[in-house]
Image (cartoon, rainbow, N blue to C red):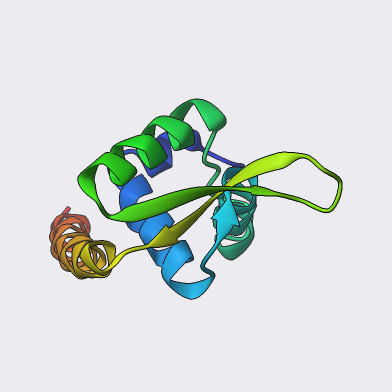
Length: 109
């Protein structure tokens, strides 16, 4: 069962990681990549993803660009910046620390 609350606190990490592997994705493709890579367990909803993308762009972690598709439709694509690569390292370290702490609690319970 997909749980959107499972993304709480990890959306930045997931978006940065997806963009480090597959640059120049649009928002829907990022949502699909998160769902696909997680075996459909994690879902980033539009109401969470787009504010996060805007915030990460403001922080300088990602860069956004409007492009025109062959269909003539405009779409906004995102890619990681150097600052985003650095932040990805910070987010991965933070996730490892939290994951270890949760595992310790689970083992002791």
